[in-house]
Image 1: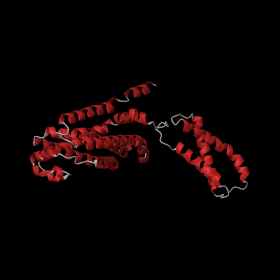
Image 2: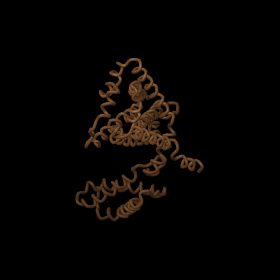
Image 3: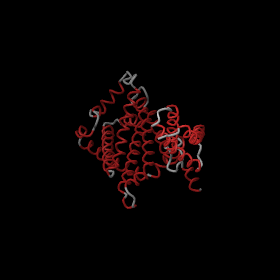
Image 4: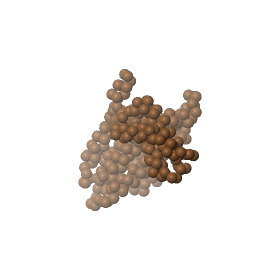
Length: 337
């Protein structure tokens, strides 16, 4: 409780002003790295201002002073608890994209290769099932338009003379992004089930993919298949695998009891990598949704298959270059230091 308000303000005013100065300087240059001494001072001034706010809250005679303190404390809280990397450095969007994401992917590459292996196993099962038992499509295919004869669907698609997605492209793209992101994040979250749930989702996606590919190949519709799937699938499928990769990183933290740390500490240790991989997968799925809406759904004679296939090949090359080579030079410089 404040007995002498004037004395209280006179005593604390300089601390509030100093906190406002630090926050103003940080706001002017959001990427400025604070010296350690200034960080410590910011923390001290924030805690002091928060304590002052708690005392002022019970004193209703000065609403303007209370509002001022509320603003100061809120800004200081955002500054202290804002997005930062594990090293305490503020996350920079461009650096995250050009360095952090590809390096995080390569650092956890075993999880990605494992996701690929599980997908290929599912692909083989789905492909063999459709090749040796055509009736298996009804049990495997999740979408009704995939149950019919592939040649009939190709003929229908190529004969369509009107834009079926007219005025609905954005909505269709949003639906695809939401659905695929939900599947990807679900595969990630199920890493907490010791990775078993992630394995099941990735395996089932492989089964569906294998069934579709073999069904169209056996019908002699390879050109249509690659012209339809490559533009968006060359990004969408790896995005789901990156989400599964993050799930396996989580699974490793859950299972890694040999390092002597409690599970909470292990999960906190991998949280940065998991968040980074999830963000990368989400960005990829946004792009894949746009491409599927505005390109993949249009076939010859509207858009030549050769163009669509070439577009997908270029996308795949850029994706491999990005994840496996971008950011290497920065890492080498950091290692030399």
